[in-house]
Every structure is written in C-alpha cells, then in structure tokens.
Image 1: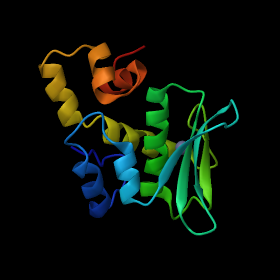
Image 2: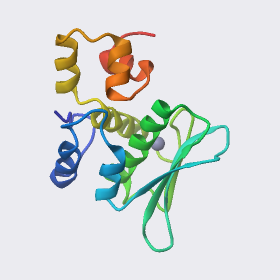
Image 3: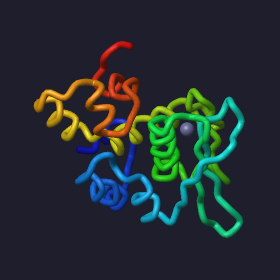
Image 4: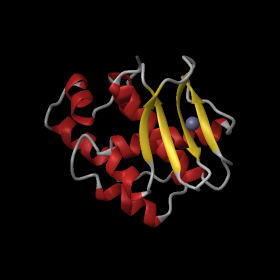
Length: 159
Ligand SMILES: [Zn+2]
C-alpha cells in the first residue's frame, strides 16, 4: 500500500497514514490532528503553494495558499505533512514551498515529499480497485479529492 522505494517512513508513521486509508477522500485534518498539527488557509505570496512552520512552542502548523483550488490545497497539505514525516529533523524551523514544490530542501527531498503525498492521498491499492471498477480520470479526481493532473501523474499518463 505504501511504496517505500522512494523514502524512509517509520512504521509508526506508516500506521498513522494507513489508519485513514479506509475512507476517501483521505481526511488530511485527521492525520494532522494525530500529529498535533493544524492546517490553515492563508494569504501567501502568489509564488507560494504552502509552508510548514515550527512555532516557538514547538508545535508545527501548515498554511496552504488560499487562492488555490481545494484539490490543489489538499496536495499541498499532504506535501507539507510529508515534509514533517520525512524531514522534520533536517528542515530547521520549517519549509516554504513555491508553486513548483521547491524550497530550501534538495530536489531529492522535494521528490520524496511529492511521492509520499501521492501515497497518502491516492494509495495504489485503492487506485487499482477503482480503475477495475471502471472509474474515469474525472471520477478518480473527485473520489480522491485531487486534481486530474495529480491522478495522471499517479497513473503515468502524459498530460
Ligand atoms: Zn516541499
């Protein structure tokens, strides 16, 4: 279900994610709650998608760009949660991602966050099940609460 070819995820964190793979679209706020992280919409720079910030009290918060579509915001929130899962020890006080999901972290780390975000939002077992049921790209986009582009990337379809 979780493809760990691209990143190292602790078994504990994997369990947290899998717990919310019984209902779709996946409840990102439930996963965030388990981690004591709050997700907000915010008025970020037009070149920004989102950010995760460690506050003075040690609690993390995620802000997603309020002008983006809710599906895009969901991918951003999953991407920022993925930075927390994978990079909290190396990201300092946080990560700010631009619209291309680039930040002060390396491209390898950004790719890891994108891969885990896709695994959180669109577990392949569920994607394959829904493909077998004959869902279209449009149906899959609604079912998983992600953009058609995100589904196409997941399925390896050029766009
Ligand atoms: Zn990032």
